[in-house]
Length: 169
Image (cartoon, rainbow, N blue to C red; front, side, top):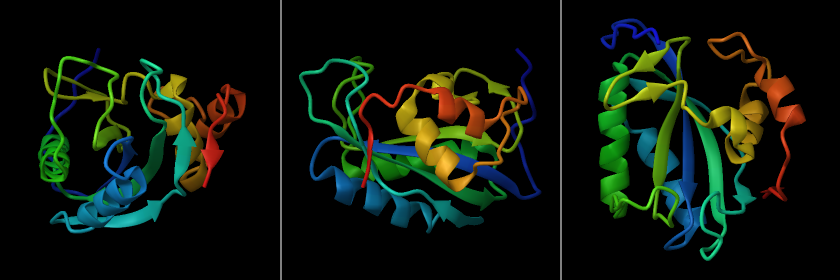
């Protein structure tokens, strides 16, 4: 896989998936969006509605609240990742080995411009985004004409994915 330069000085549009199913998830996602709006050298350009979705992993956990936010930033991808992880930590996120377990807040970089990034800390485009209705439907809401780095259409992929009972709130 191609790895691109991780340092940026020009503005890039990044899309970030937000999710929570603990400690008042609507408030967690809303607070995360507000915190993202304060990231230096970055401006929020779009925020999807909130979506209620079933958990991807173990079903013995509460449903999730999800959203996607678009920002324009001059931060590098890793600087953005650091800022997002700081927001997760402030919210009380505890990283566990349980990959798909309940969480207070998850902020995932879905796309960083048209770059493909593959290193030990970050994979962009997000490895599972084409399979997740809770990512694709909010992303298609705010960026329906968007094409992924492999030139696939977000609108087309979102229209073909099983909605799995997701509800737009």
